[in-house]
Image (cartoon, rainbow, N blue to C red; front, side, top):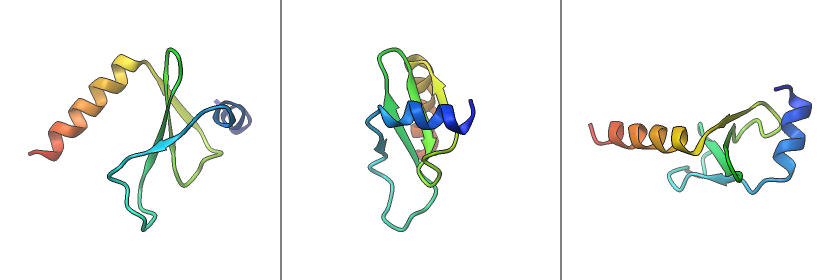
Length: 71
């Protein structure tokens, strides 16, 4: 997906940053849930590329990421 496509997709979505994201501007991602997909982008490059995954893939990723925080 190129940046022009990313911008048009991004403009119609409600993006959310993790509640774990601080205000110091570190490495953060933003997520927008569509009807059948989950969109993920870099919060510092909002007009950059967007990764699109299935809801099941997103749930699996979040589960693995959460588990690794508890190690």
